Image: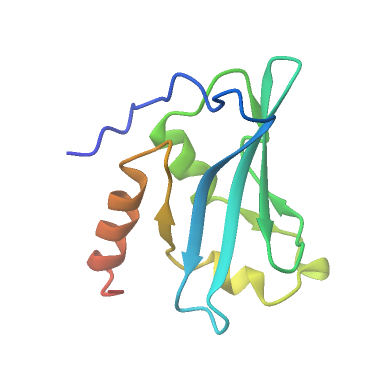
Length: 124
């Protein structure tokens, strides 16, 4: 059973100001797109950033929060990522419409959630 209310105590272990929350791979994309989601902390608030190969400005919801996200909130953030159509590079809009394979050291059930979703839609 996936624990959608799971929330890590912290994103940081003292090794730096930025941490990788999730690595998303879109294997159906023409180029096997990958998007990484990072958290930074500034003045006690967590700011989120999504980075892809092309440097697209990927909009996240929420952009910042004052405590680590629950698994459910992280899934929402991933599934609602968006870009400005006129400035998008590498057909990222089509990529974002897909269902990623996901990895996360901070959210153990994230990979399982997206794996089950991909299987449901026949994307193995």
